[in-house]
Amino acid sequence: MKIAIIGAGYVGLTSAAVFSKLGHTVWAVRKDADKVEMLKRGEVPFYEPGLPELVKEGVLSGRLIPTTSYAEAVPNAEVIFICVGTPSLPSGETDLSQVFAASREIAENWGTGYKVIADKSTVPVGTAEKVRKTINAECDFDIASCPEFLREGSAVHDTLNPDRVVIGIDSDRARDVLLEAHKGLPGERLITDIKTAEMIKYASNAFLATKISFINEMANLCDEVGANVDEVARGMGMDPRIGPAFLKAGIGYGGACFPKDTKALHSIAFLHDYDFKLLKAVIEVNQAQRRQFVRKVRSVLGGFEGKKIGVLGLAFKNNTDDVRESAALDVVAWIAKDGAQVIAYDPQAEGNAKEVMPGLSTRPKPEEVYEGADAILLLTEWGEFRDLPWASLKGKMKTPFIFDGRNLLDPQYMRSLGYTYISVGRPDIR
Image (cartoon, rainbow, N blue to C red; front, side, top):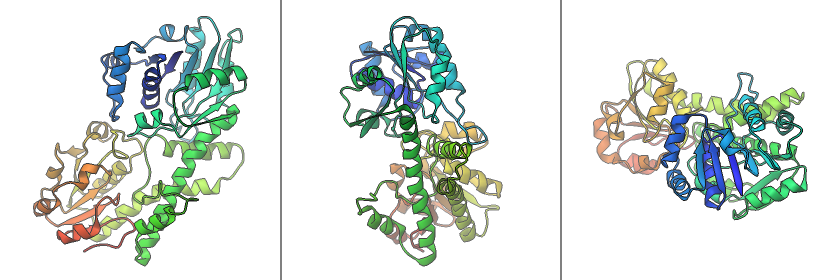
């Protein structure tokens, strides 16, 4: 098939690379000419494991065609996936300006023949109908919703191995075209109406965010009573009705999806005069969790004024360079404001972090943040932090305090090395 992907960010580029691997001819449209030239060389403008190799394979095969031109991509396409950004407005509502701008460009470069226009961007219920109205009524087309469920850091695997493919349509013709486009991918097919498909993505992300906020509340209670939240989560996860995923206590969720989508869903409820109390609490708990961590560090250190704090991790999660809504950056900003000298390291996110915090002091190696440090804060769960030479690093510190905001390290091991080790929802090891 011939497919046009409008937007070549995390979702669009990964989708384009995977569809080309399936044998389709795919145009990946991005307005930034410099980034398109990178893609043509098989280079990816952000960090995502496995994606550069897949993009290069698609470009060399001729099936993946990066371009800035709608006129090149749209006329011959049988399916057009809209994968542009949908950021939050200050109100929490979704900014759909990029979606509608893309829709108008599609209409202006239509060409001939029947096409299916499908939203992959996460959009509020009713967006597909608004997109329909931007397309010339004389064009032969159907509108659809095909939400994505990939995770940053494992986007290639998730897109190649979906557990479900959701197809929201209002015609059999669109259904058949989209089933053909996704042929070759595993996962159950859920064929539903468009509004339901639009809601499924929000519901999925909001529920996962709820699990995270719940286990973080449990972690705070475990701190009070002396229980171990890791074992609590393990015991909960053994119940197949609950499952172990997203029950890892820490300093809260971040990134491009969970914060935005929970706020958007809460906004949808508000606009329809529904008081979504649970979701409101999920959002509040997530914001409070990172402040709770800072309070714990402040209490142990007796304040931040004049303290030198080493920070491990700036990305919102491991295996990505994304710092959007990063809890780590919030923590760094707050302790610096309170007088701490912060020295940070992240294997991939340093550049993006400095764009957000231009004065941030970083080091090229993790060992360098230990020099004279009053404490180390572990804020992103990069696997390499688990394997650091902790025994030899202790001697570089002024005082051997480790605050593990991701419960990455083994408490007993850290104690055996002589650290005061404090994590989230697990008994402190001193």
